[in-house]
Image (tube, rainbow over all chains, first blue to last red; front, side, top):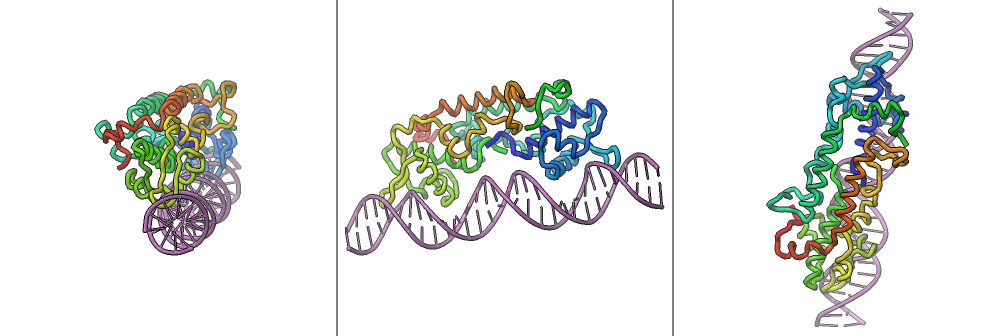
Length: 145
Length: 145
DNA sequence: ACATTAAAGGACAAGAATATCTTTTATTAT
DNA sequence: ATAATAAAAGATATTCTTGTCCTTTAATGT
């Protein structure tokens, strides 16, 4: 199994794609995004609808419409996308799925996974949606294939 | 989403349960294990069949039969269970699901996730199946609820 | 106003993961 | 040998994830 659901992988890649296009003041349509991140167009549409409802991205309908990201939202952390799509189990859940796992009643992997979860949290909470814009524009980072 | 699939959570908990019972020279039946780790009995049966076929655990049929773990297998790493059930995407896959992600063609999270994957690998490859036997016997660690 | 464009929304379909049920096979004790 | 036990195996059911299709709504340009 992967760290993120497939839906979440698409979501992150799409948001980063929209972000670096938005930095140029451009809105992007669903076809453009789907091609830009190699994802099924109609499924991605559903995901973006959801992210739009949740305020992570914005959209306008009609000619010259499309998806974009508010300047202020570029400083939101990537964790916002993950939480919106996959929930917060990755940040707070027990690795072995125990509801009552805690310091008092730890599962065998409790201590070791705490460190890993903390590192994952640190990464996703401190990395912003706009953090990769320059490198994406420069073509130094990949979002497809 | 959680780190492991539900199937894998059951698998790890069951194997650790079997391990610490095996340390006492006892075989344990599926009912016992399912109750001991709070899992659906018949589903767990399927998982253990699979682990048995893959040589991670052993079993004997008939009266006084049940599941057990060879002494030598107690020193196998937990990663063996994870790989058998969830595959190795957690250890080697790209966080954003890109097939071609690498140093040459990195996804935006490539570098940061490499560190996290390495830590996960380190934990799962160096922690053995038998590592928690004493604490489990002493009731200091939980496998259910 | 009207036609065109593009996202939103609702419904549906396919596939995978999770869970259950029933029959078969192997082992043990009598 | 036979009966009882317990895992293996095969079949089926349910739920969740992923993916597609079709209609509706909102915005724009003419």
